[in-house]
Length: 251
Image (cartoon, rainbow, N blue to C red):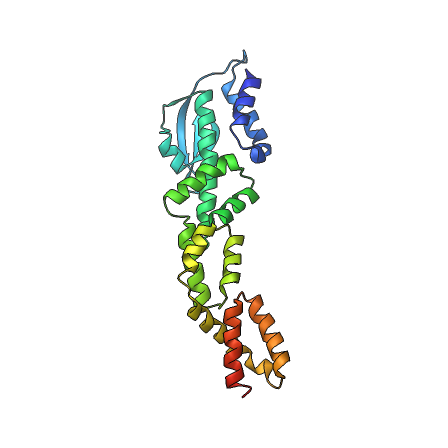
């Protein structure tokens, strides 16, 4: 009956998006229910490609527009003219369509620049998809390597070394904020030895040296030390910087 149809279809949609489909449910109830309030099997009589979005198709049941789907759902569910659609088919179609919407949303987000699993998950949550729907989307994207946190950590560290010098501690903190696992972070940071970190610190000091001219040694140490700590450098690296500066600048 009408109530069972609405409940079944409503349950197929993640809770955050349910408010968006109330009108859709009403329209479908008019299409699927007969005068005796019994659910009828309907037949696809027309499939029409949308003009504005050529990847989406309008589905007509018994010559009445019912809903639209992405081309991926059209193919995977083998929607063709003459195919019969019942309540169970409809519920499965809605699940597939919602998952595909989330996947397309995630792929668009990933196309702008690489993202971590945490970033993609938070992005989908902000767009009203819930974890029940997000989990299989994330799994599929990881399987196809659209999401690869280990590779992301490697590229992130390389970028920091080349363009934005940082110490290991700050890089580790930044990667943790992005949801990278400790094992992936430590595995990549091991490639960044103390000599590399020391050279990065020297680059920053060279850019700052004009700001420290005329300072006495104690003030110089305090200011430069605080700056390098904020940039994530270890005490050992900072001590080596002090030694070099003392020899090159203060003697």
